[in-house]
Amino acid sequence: GAVVSQHPSWVICKSGTSVKIECRSLDFQATTMFWYRQFPKQSLMLMATSNEGSKATYEQGVEKDKFLINHASLTLSTLTVTSAHPEDSSFYICSARDWGGLSYEQYFGPGTRLTVT
Amino acid sequence: GIQVEQSPPDLILQEGANSTLRCNFSDSVNNLQWFHQNPWGQLINLFYIPSGTKQNGRLSATTVATERYSLLYISSSQTTDSGVYFCAVGSGGTASKLTFGTGTRLQVTL
Image (cartoon, rainbow over all chains, first blue to last red):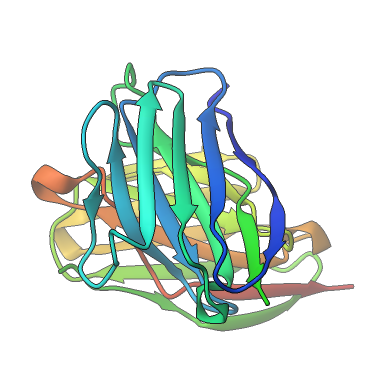
């Protein structure tokens, strides 16, 4: 149980284009999902908290107009990187907390590797 | 915000050896998880352990919340244990939000 999927697993796009990444909780419902970013050989940094049916909450320094988050259902959150530039190249990972769970435990997707050329 | 430090940053072991990884945090927490990040980047949940002790096979973990640290023990290490180990914590009303530690990069050799 507690499986989170992401799609695509990797993507290459040209500078100036937009890319959408999907995060799905496969066997549980998640009112809250989280988006992280990881640069090579670094730790994970929380970008934003995605709340089902409401606006996302962004961490300080994260451009909300660049990283658009939509949490349209209890099992799906999407991250759209708009007008991507090479510095947006990174590993993006989502996580989800089981709505029915008794703990704060989060489950992570396999990540999406974005390369902007 | 809360600070999370892990030690050691790098660790090389021979197969069969035991190791202890440490996670120190700067404030009280009510959420603490240990993860293993495999070479493909997937984070694998090892323990959800805001306090107390848990064991799962060759792995065990202890969190002493009052002293603001957690330990991950790996016994009889195997090459498949290689990767990066992260602890992540959450506190207070935003306990769902995880702050990740700096990580320990483990390499297990034959």
